[in-house]
Length: 232
Image 1 (cartoon, helix red, strand yellow):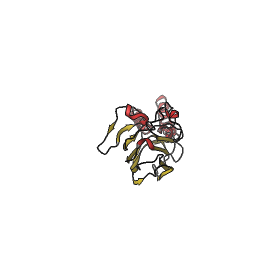
Image 2 (image 1 turned 30 degrees about the vertical axis):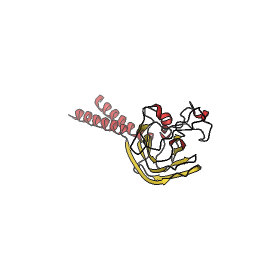
Image 3 (image 1 turned 90 degrees about the horizontal axis):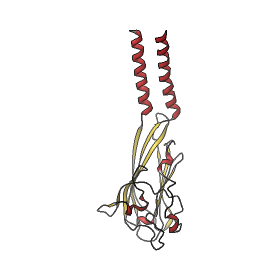
Image 4 (image 1 turned 45 degrees about the vertical axis):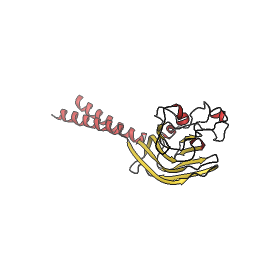
């Protein structure tokens, strides 16, 4: 009876430890803005928010997705990036639609109401070639990979064409989510202004590696003690 009890406790501890190791936490934030992006101005609009994602214990980011609702203006005029509090940098928009044809510098669609996710099927960079949808307000919709092209937005059009995605949302993985997150947007051409209606963050975290290691060692220790008692 005693041996069976020890085995039952060991099995329960192993199950609890495995469950704890696999546990993730998701936190969703939405921010209302309703501010215009200055037209033809590289200083742009800086939106900063301080987040406390996990106050109970240290955590690390497993994934980040971003929502962005912008009305009016011209999508091809916009440059936007997200900067994390403890590392990470993602270029969300960088003159979307620009081609190696210098007579066209980006798409002329007016606004977007989208989600950015590295897991999306297509990059937003050339969304007009990827089965895109426009809502009744003229905004691009859907879930897209960030543009990720980390070159100056005033670069020649030929520099954008075929450029690699080097600044994606996976750059935040493994960092602590607590602190100041900064969303920057700029409109780099003259014309109709764009307005940021709202934006949001969906952050999935996991316990930091040291916490996971302690959990695993605890489970292994219980199992080892039970094994020794069985052999006694």
